[in-house]
Length: 441
Image (cartoon, rainbow, N blue to C red; front, side):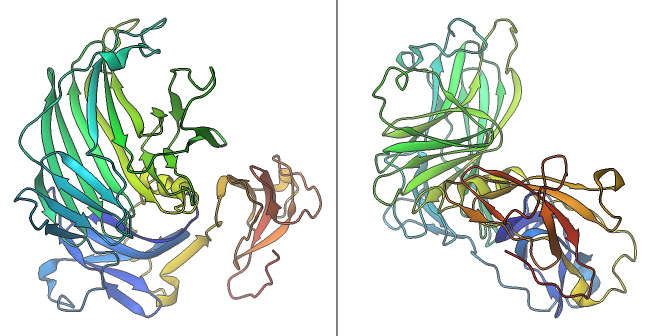
């Protein structure tokens, strides 16, 4: 659970009228029925790590069903493109928009309407015999052996409401049926894509190629404990090495000038590569040695496209990748829990947002063995994942007791600042409810 900046989140919950507890009383949430069951809801003002209490009542209960629902932030709109034919649609929510047509995702636009693609997304398939180690190395000449990928008809719309719009596009790769789901949620700055397939191929490579509207001068991808930027045009022997890079959760093109670009958010580690003209993500392979059935069977590949005006850091690509990979936790409450609580206590913030470039690495309680008194002291570890110096603030509900090492041993009163890529550790104490304290910074 990463303490992220405020952003509304759209989630799917069981059907019914849902009410959100707030300081000024309960607010009814706008809902949209989902074809697969349940309904979509938008929970506003989610910041840091906290608890939001929801109450559901049957739609036919009659109590409050006519109450005005909260407005939807970044509502989704689907419009037919004028002069583009019956199968061309413009999908958007004010933060990102896309042109959907017979060729799939034909164009992507940022919040200012600037195009991001030089052409439709290319779902590609090549013959790949491997090299050196079949299960690991791509063949050096795989791009010289393209294979057919057949789509059946045009994308079909399954949902078209203000909270969620989704299309499905079916096709076939050889003996493998494939299904592409594209989805845009209210208030979300990315377009989500899910490719599902019953993979039955042998010695083949399946990739997504993303043609860039503006040539990239560099490209970035996260790695364990940091971010690495690389030149988009290879000039040295090392840069011309054909091996792909293993990205953990995102990659992004970096353009000239302000660094405008496009990021690809990943649901898990993937092999990625980039050139001046395109970004590429390897989705599936089909090696036969040492495992003749590697990758075969049901596969689901999930990713998202995030326009980055001003660059990947300004667009908070690492934080958005965290949101994509780590959905909200929805759990039932015990009967009667919170029924007699005051309305102001219905929304509880456990830990505030850490701020730009800062990521939570560890948070654990301290006990007597660590030299801490009983009463809720914790050890907090934070890393600065950016090239700028950042200050850390624990918010008004925590007291900073001092800096320490990774084992919790005190090290004096180090200021709450982190240099580029630096890892910091602090002891924190919970402020008792109802008391006031001054937060150092």
